Image (cartoon, rainbow, N blue to C red; front, side, top):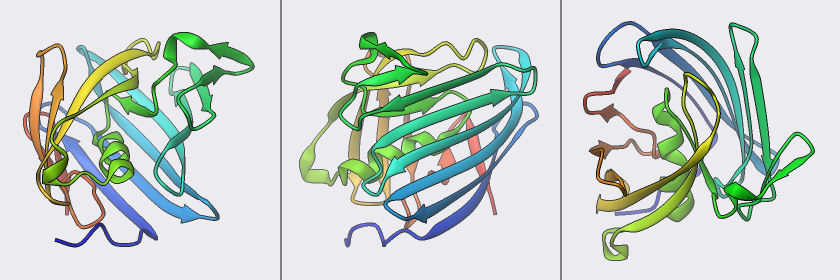
Length: 189
């Protein structure tokens, strides 16, 4: 099967599999960057939230910046050098060294980043990654070890938490965006 098609732009919406909520996401290829802007409302750990985020990646889908603003006035902004070294404002954050990708608890979009960046095929086998993970309750990031395995090139991936606490089989569309995230999210058409 051919690689993912050249990316230009896309707008998608997901809803949680349980409870109320919605994500409205627009992603565009801009000069030497992929820029994602989203609004997400829902519940995390039993508490309602409202979030706006902007994720900026280089043209190869490597995370370079994440900015999150909450409806209750909190905000975080992290910037990467593209090699897994992060800053929170001007403060260097060495505890996140090696995290090339980001993961946002309330959005299936961030699964697209390693899927597109790595271009995994079935022959690659499982790949373990350290993610800069943002929970949608505290928004205080931490390192989360994850594993991606391509089951069907450019169409189906296995996602697993390395600690064994979670796994899911993720079908993706021709752009590498999750179409169904069992037990968590469903894409609206």
